Length: 150
Image (cartoon, rainbow, N blue to C red; front, side, top):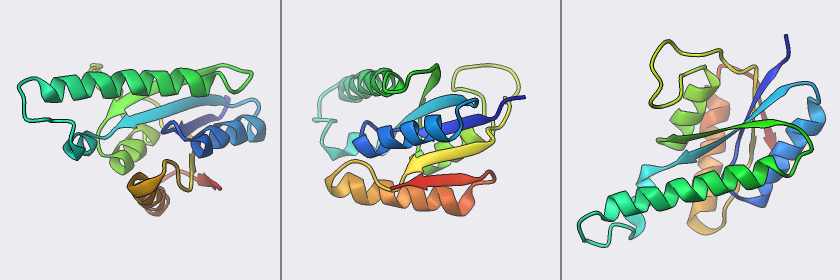
């Protein structure tokens, strides 16, 4: 049975490097790139105070997430499964790593991942501080081995 590796990605070069690292380190493993849409990000001015703003924000975030996953999966010369989820990043990453089924799917949870890989920090500015705290939260609470790529 091959090893299953979950790599959290956010569109940053550091996250792309984490995927490259995982692909090089575990050449025979099944790789899954996970992008988490954080609903808290909508509070940064995306609401705009007009009807439908949250739907518009979500559609924009979903499109960005799909673009991030497409771009990152093309940087390695092998198959990469992709997964887009909505939630608080730390909790969502840990849940997916533990085998939680994708949002919207019925049935039982899936197989947990064997290893988790993420960047120590990703995006710039305030988001960079927050992502650093995500990495710390994942490392502290993960039930599977975690590799943090710098």
